[in-house]
Image (cartoon, rainbow, N blue to C red; front, side, top):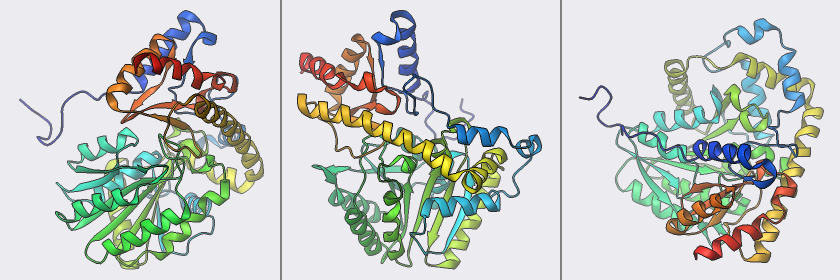
Length: 409
């Protein structure tokens, strides 16, 4: 007997992160934090080992009137001032494309809404082979197929593999949805160059001659890019899209505001064809109404207040943690190079991912835990969350990991 859709996989969700987090906490409780390395947590932690909650953000939130926190948002698409602030903050003057903004429950809501509303039943989405696992889960829950492209060609973005994956999908359907998580890719920490983005846009324009094309750019970690405002300059390339290409930028307050549990974000829709953009906005708005109905009003009000009244203090506080993240990642990456611990090309962001085949990965992951080092398995690699490790915990970690790897190689 089956009471759910026949097309949906009923197997239990594979909890690849939180179960390991729980094991790490149990180890810490038993053996002491000084003897355990917990590199599992995908949130920003301070040097004191506690979750970072930016003072400027949460002081703003706590000072809001209770009725602001309690009330519904003004619209299914989010509050007007929030949507304007999101657009201005994210694009930072780097695009002149017609646009719409739809508030969502975190960046996750924006990604899922794009998948569910841009593809038809049975079609496939183009995803990187190394990626946030929820992309695959969303595709499966919506009944979509997946065509993977290899993320890297050496130390560069693999444009040839992306093209091959897109061409394979276009041979069997009339629409093309491509997901690119950039900058600060989760889980490798890679960021594309403006030249790589220019090549992607030029290729998608070619695809647009025969197909309807949507580029979904997941920018969850962009506000922790080491170049800060310069990291947003690649948006200028989007102005070169053709009439048959649309861009959806998925923005997350979870990372930018360290407000993970508030579940607030937005989808920024951009296209040259204003009628097609309006249709897209209408469909996304109806999807929002039918799925979550309303977005956290307090989170939206907080975002507006921070950017309008406390921007300098917020930027100063956040950039201190960007510098800390850079210090941690530099230690790990430099020491990995010294000992020959191979990882995917890292430029910036919360994670560094060690590269290896999945059989080696499984053995290595188990061996690390036996040595009180906890990480997260991803396709063809081991994710190390430098975002949650103190500077001291980063020191010497690459060497320890390499010694363990050598015992199983």
